[in-house]
Length: 299
Image (cartoon, rainbow, N blue to C red):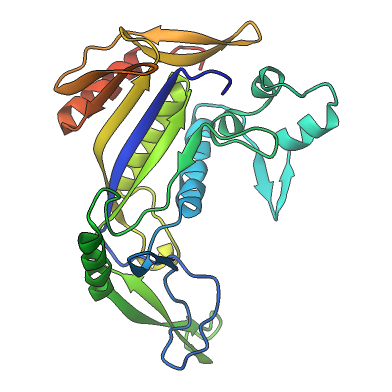
């Protein structure tokens, strides 16, 4: 489905922790002052900083999207102790030697794999890493924001409770690093999506914002409540008069040109057609409300 460019949808997002927030680094720092579970960090040209890995966000989005799909009676791949059961899109493709082209793979996989990919098919959705600065800021501003977000890091203590006695277990004290403020910026990009796939991502963004979905570790202890805001929605479409979505029909990927009434949007001609940038929150909401009315019943 990626042989031709039909459209891009880019969500420019801002993430702000509402509560303590923890994504573990996964490795162990042997220095005496280090916590038992540090927040993940990465080295950048502007200094070493905490960040939100795109892989962590993709896992959260896929998990929530699969729950949403199941609520609509859609069949998705199941995971149990590291092995897929009932439906295994990747295994089904491997067992079918005649399936090689994307036109053959796409209809044979579940809606989740159609959106987030599997070992045989690329993902429609691409997640960036989120950093405590915007990509278009100056070097000085990026260094400043890296320094500022460290002020929001703190260490919390945890203790293991014996379930039989109700008291603390001996030697079970540990600590972990959390972030309680600051901002993270990054993008989620969709390439050649169907209408329902864009709405699926939008719905999960709202579920995170509304507090129904938490991100990171130690969620049962009150962590992971995030405010996620769409600062801008950038749409590139090969049609200058409509948004060209992907439609799979009669064994082929086809253009699905859909008309929208855009409000408070900046339009310009682009190499492949048109580019539309929406920064007004009400206009972004209006776009997705229109999209709901155009959602195919067969999705």
